[in-house]
Image (cartoon, rainbow, N blue to C red):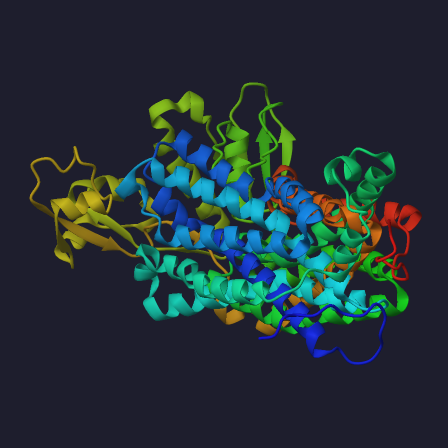
Length: 628
């Protein structure tokens, strides 16, 4: 492969072979880095089981929080570290370093022994690798976008950089495809045991190809020109953020463009997936397939809107995308509910729960890692209702009283976990069962699985479940399985103390006696409708994200461009965007409305729309090679 040559300052006509190589080399590496980054989120359940689950709850929570922070909150620090390096030594070598860090960190996750083998070192090393991933991703995007933009002919930067904008979506798409392929080849049990490591190990092949291609690339012509003229910055961080004339541009980039772009992007690609799977209860495989289909249909619009921004400007397209998202999110997500889980939509339309709680008993349930435990009677009630996508209203009750939940004609009393002490587990089981039966009777799409009950607990089980109308003699005379004591303990049917002196025991399978699960009926799932809504959401993403790289590059002069554009981009996407799912879910839990969390992206998109319309300049006609 020949070295990638510099591209002329201004040219019209078809893209040359050298320009294609610049875009391909930059984009391939960035696709790979996003692929690596998404693997952790997609496989978090398996990673947690391997590295975290063996430890006490407090320790697990600390590790989960650190892993979360490394993934999102540390990215702006990577932007500072590698942005500075890119403005000092060059774009090419800096994002060669970032791809090596990301690739090796990802591969090492695939071979890292679990906590069962090396103890506490396993989660510590994992968090360290995740920190390195976050730092590398913080430096990658700015380098790739700057490199491509500085190679692009004047008047075509939107089109050229739009290919970089496809990389996050393509990385997500690639990770979903590989995970689905490996799952289908191995089956659920083997995938959970060891197969989840394969997508991490496969990344080493992508790493090798990406590094080989990037080694063939030349430095960007704008950076070479700046160096030749001696106009480089000796202190990019100080110049970019310590001088008001540049710092105000960074603030404008953040609040007048990136903040709104980030929440629309995360809402359209990540919160939509979360909403389908966790709120509407669509199974994971169907969710991944529908999201993948929408990405396949919508990804081309990144390039279309990048091309269009060269004609009519960056600002009109980004602002239009923000406005469309703001005014259509509520109807689109309601349509998503009707298409994905019509039984849930019908139940929500007719039955709302009423939670009566003492003043001050209900808290705001912000839980970004999914590990927080809620202990007040109101929080226990509202958390359970929210997880089951049940709308509710909260009304004030008597001070000091336990919260109650009224569903149709049934009233169920909650409990305070701290006051309950060692009785909390039993009280929680009774509370959740009462809620689930009331919801099922009210028309919510709940199914109850089978229960495995050992002989020693059969009579107590029958007494605790009168609604099943079970007959002990009939059960004992029917089919049963004799299970060794060791398996009884492993399957958590008996505790170790309960199994003392036991060689084996009969176990009965009782239909409709197990746990309740809210489900989306596959027979009523409207695939075409769901994919259509998801595709519209992806198109909004392409409107705000397609032109954003060109806009950011054109806002900053060459000597601080890498640093200047990287920090607002990663603050916006890592913080405002990355916190969207957890914050939106907490808002929905607080209000008792599964759609209430949509106010998070709507409000921040609205703020960006106002600031951008008033203060953000149009940049498409700027000559970035003469910006000092």
